[in-house]
Length: 255
Image 1 (cartoon, one colour):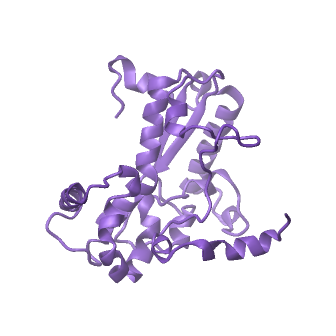
Image 2 (image 1 turned 90 degrees about the horizontal axis):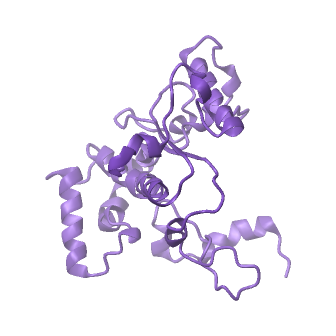
């Protein structure tokens, strides 16, 4: 069976139910766990179970998050407050928490809302609290969990980072029109420090600016990692980036 990729892309969202479309970040089609007897299966077990078994290849990994992943959604939340108020429970309790019992779900919702919002309702003033939850649910939680699983079950080094730098190269924050009331690096803000973009006009920044120097350091870290399997071989940048395994130490506590 053949189909035009452009038509498939345009039609894919029509398969989603209305409640599925109400979620800010939605994907009509995603990878699934395949039956082992399927033709050329790729994923035959849940990824969480797979990562708990030691990989035969000892390949270093680098992964990280932005300091405030969710601020990329702030403008959307501000312009859709009514929708977010109606769906606040599902926004605060993602399906990944797996809380099917209605009473437990209500208790969890109340506890999470109190933790982030205290006694305040969702409003333009409390949007920063909601985008923090959205960022945690969409990105931070999964990254921390992956790093913890890797630390506990794999032997290859994992270099983890939290990106918080702000400059004219934080183009995704700019693209998403993040309000000043929501500080922090947005999802994707690290990319223009690593790659040039004609769309974002990244090469037009002042070559003597702090942003350009930060960009130089980041590119050096990433290319070092690609070449040597570590971002700071032989203290090449005047500091040493420790792997998660080294940072956690012997007590086994991942923080």
